[in-house]
Image (cartoon, rainbow, N blue to C red; front, side, top):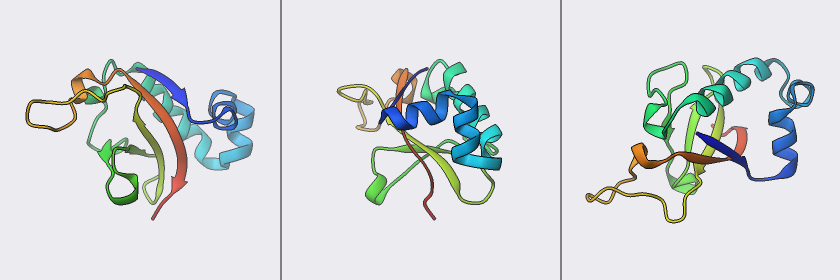
Length: 111
């Protein structure tokens, strides 16, 4: 998939290995693995829902966003489809097989 970033600062932190290590410490190597996984997946449907990446849709204040696990505890890489409009199924749900680009929004412990 094509990745974009919600800010220049986030893009620098997530595309420069030294900056990633400074910003995220011991989580940097797993974070890089998740970014590589997203880049390698042709569509969002191809990102595994089983751990360790565990792609999942978020709700409440994060409605419309997805996350993958960075650590087994609470840290997540949060992103949203980068399509306007977001592709949908006839049933009204999001068509994950049509999502080919995502915008990385945040790296956060949101629990």
